[in-house]
Figure 1: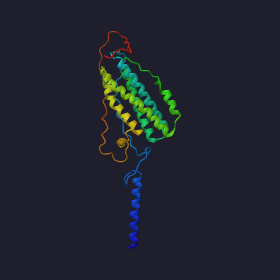
Figure 2: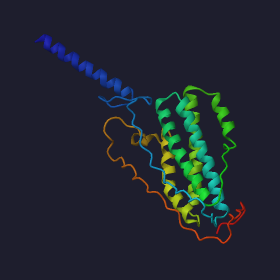
Figure 3: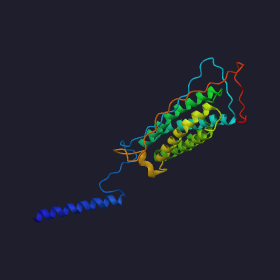
Figure 4: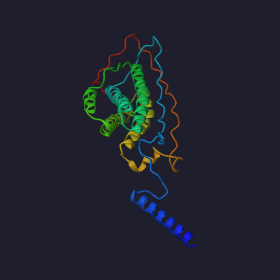
Amino acid sequence: MKIRLLAFTLCLVLLATTASAAKRKGRKPGTRTVPPTSKMIVLPALPAIPQVPERPAGERITTDIGGLDLQFFNSAIESGRLVAYFGDMAKTRAESGAIKDVGSALANTQADENKQLVRLAALKGVTLSAEPPAQQEKLAAELAALAASNFDKACMDRIIAASKDSVSAYEGAVGSKDGDIKGFSEQMLPISKEKLRLAEKMTGAGAKAAKALFRTGPKPAGTPAPPAPIPPIVATPAPTVKTGTAPVLSPNAPAK
């Protein structure tokens, strides 16, 4: 009888010690925490990028876009190329496995988005520069001096800054008078916001909602379903111009 009583007392002491340790660590008894680098972290799938149709060979370029549309193209492709560049850098140099995965996902999605931007611009008679953004070299040099977690944080900060510029570009372009630019921007705006949200969660911004993005086990209750795939946009047929040459676009032309 005394032995059973002693064993029962030891069990109670052990349970109390475990609960106390869990409380000091800021979690409920019986749960376990998962570090950010754990392979159990589930990365959400990013929405598909809307596809822009190719311009048929020999078709005359007709356009009536203004200066604001030209500004959109330049701003969107510049920020998009920065996201792709730093995403690739995170994929290869990040210390955290989760940061590597996010960098890879963002870089791959952004590469397709940039391709569609170039194609849409070509449909409007605009040739976008293939040169890297002006600030890319300077920002890359700053990251070259960092390593480990310092690099991870700084690289994600660069991605967030460029992603915010992308969101701003699409927010402005949804008011375009050109149907194709307006339609593409309306589809891309929620996608660009989702990519920004993902990057911010990885740096701790908005940590209260992190479980909606990175989870273990069953999907948390109340987590919204992923957005449905976005159908490809169809270019609006433009009237045929009388001359066989493409109109000259002036960067200072007012938006119509």
